[in-house]
Image 1: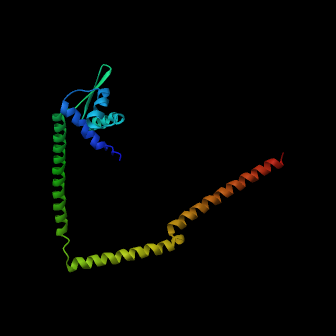
Image 2 (image 1 turned 45 degrees about the vertical axis):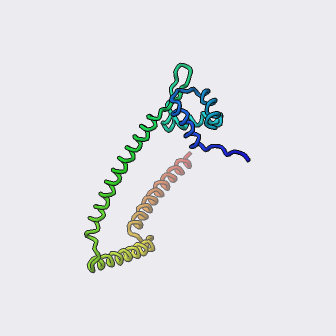
Image 3 (image 1 turned 90 degrees about the vertical axis):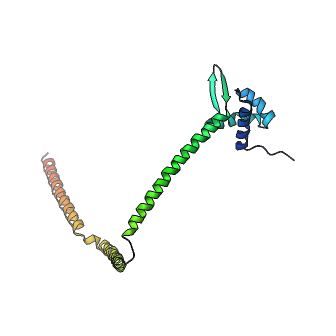
Length: 182
């Protein structure tokens, strides 16, 4: 029966345990030797786990000369968690305030919308007029070819085409006259 490997989260927890138990600085090579023996983290995944922990801000990293050193202290992890908690609490407070404002605004909007016969009549009239407007727009689309604005645009286009024909005809006649005299 084979032993199941550790998930990434489990590896991250175990790697942090190495740092927090010893409260020491390590190079990557040292961690690649220590992690498999003491915590069961596969040597090939130590670098990936460290990169994830650095990205999460749980492990600090510094390059001193040609060596890279990694460390993490329990107090630093607690400070990070405390800062995140304070940020989340501030966000919660802001969202709670916004929710209260929206609820007050909603209540204010409902004040003029009580159901009464006059409002019901006005809503029915609005629905009727909206339906009528929609029907008239459909009917207007059906008569789109006879639209006065479209007709005027077509008339202007016809006049322009007529003037262009006269000019071309005159130009052709002049050209023919000059060619026949040659």
